[in-house]
Amino acid sequence: MAFELNHVHVKSPDPQQTAKFYVDNLGAEIMGEIPGRGVRLNLHGLTINLTTHVEDQKRQQHYGMEHFALNTDDIDTVVNNLTSSGAKLLEEMTSQTGRRVCFLEGPDGVQFELIQAAS
Image (cartoon, rainbow, N blue to C red):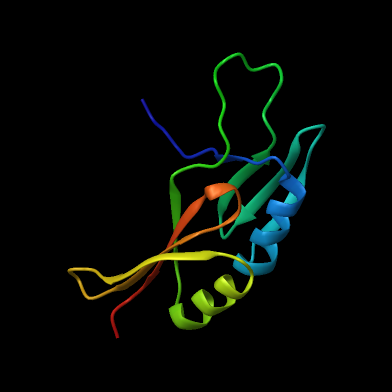
């Protein structure tokens, strides 16, 4: 049995505004519309489906997700840009392997982790 990642799904009350945040601040690219629901993004090779609640799904739905992580070579500039765009810095730390790590919160409570390799 084999598996491969298909997508990460983020739900938002305003998918277009949330997509703009990811495009403007994290370099995501819009891959296309999900008709009547939202958009599909490419975040550096990670497909993100970004929609509102889906009416024909019967299970309980909620906005957001736990977090996703991105590597960066300039964590200070990225954190500065993100907080200037409304992201909330939640935690800064150095991992046991010496990498700098920051957790931030973006639209709809979605958290993301930035990781910079030790220098």
